[in-house]
Image (cartoon, rainbow, N blue to C red; front, side):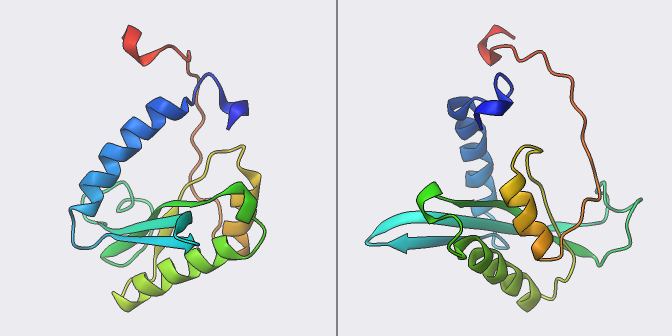
Length: 142
């Protein structure tokens, strides 16, 4: 998202997210769902279970013992607006329901209004807001 520069750098972000994805995919409660057209990935969704005990959720919200986190949902620009994001989200939610999880969370960057609208159409509501004051320095300079 260019409007988030200098806070978000695609290369650095992918490096960190790749490590997170590798850790999540090593767990048995993680599901990665790919949308593929003509043998090419055009979107994906990733969800996993979060125990509530000892987490930041426990002292604020009434939930079940586990919460499903939609860690990531992404669709290539050429396929946005086709219903693919909704289908991925619905399938991730169905997977969580099959595991007995009805409480779900997800996050979106503030400027990603299309994603926020998609999530709100599916019943998600703002519950937590981060405000940031970041210098935007190069991570290598730390």
